[in-house]
Image 1 (spheres, rainbow, N blue to C red):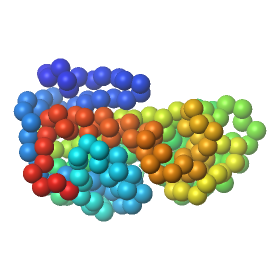
Image 2 (cartoon, rainbow, N blue to C red):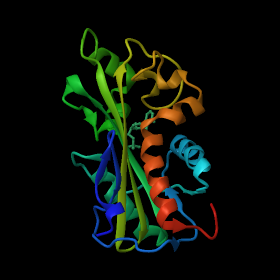
Image 3 (cartoon, protein in one colour):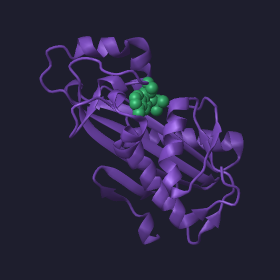
Image 4 (cartoon, rainbow, N blue to C red):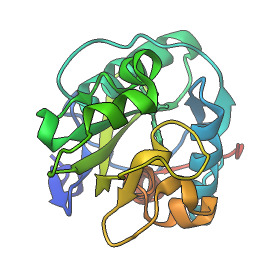
Length: 221
Ligand code: IMP
């Protein structure tokens, strides 16, 4: 197996790990367009900006994908990638994100979208009222599937804490998440400030380095 493809944990990031099979990439390959499949415009905007400095352009495909219930975002992302590839028959990039609250044994984790829809951020504020340990990890798993027999997963994590009150207006959990080393929520940051440090940035940066080493695109975007 190609040394570069081995699992390598770097500050919470899993770089270039092949979960789906063991066929290494041996040469730089041209893959044409790269589809980022998500129904979430916020995610697309962020990922587009994060990948720009690496010269990687993506094409947005809005499509609901199969989202299985399991304990890890890596697995959810892999299954999404398989579903996306079989629908488009084109190299695809997908992601799955979860917020893991330590004092709640990792809840909502892979159920973050469901919890957000059902109890909302106010529900989380009630749940965390008076809780001393407010530590939390925001985690994104990116799955890249260039063809029918290969797949790669990259993870980025950001530690932080749950704010005492919701601050700022942005999307999803941003108004309650204060990243480690900061005193404001993601939602209070400018987009480029969040993109410079976020869980998503770490995951896509790991992907971008791998992609630029092993692949190239003829038709950018
Ligand atoms: P999913 O990856 O779309 O399943 O995301 C799970 C949940 O986390 C959804 O409610 C998203 O809105 C939310 N979410 C994902 N990424 C972020 C982020 O960067 N900031 C805030 N909320 C997010």
